[in-house]
Image (cartoon, rainbow, N blue to C red):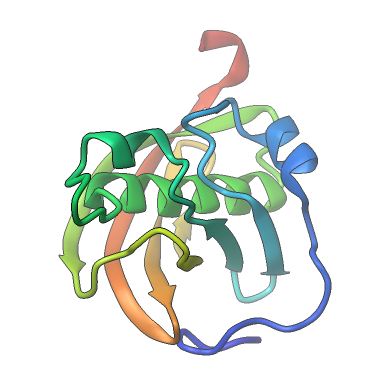
Length: 157
């Protein structure tokens, strides 16, 4: 399994079309472009977000010095965690953000960056769970947090 600072190698496990079948999000809020690795035994997912200058948020978030909003980095991490939950077998439920703890932003994310999203499951149950999440750019931690979620029946959304 790839560690928290190296770039995963190998083929794409899930592309954006497969991701759209798992997550309810759509443009401009679908923030995971591909899944690069999943290890269900260790409860780890590594996904990717390609950050481009065409992102709508760059028009208003410091247009002269664009950086990706921290809350959207956290959302991308939460979405990667939601894909992990689905792959762990909770296919009739959707992970809904419950809380974020110990969030730290270590490095700005700019247009052109490839944001690697790494989540490791800390707890999963039929009611929800928690992941330790790290966003990585160029081998360096850009953000980290512990993200908790509730699992909600798809029919209730």
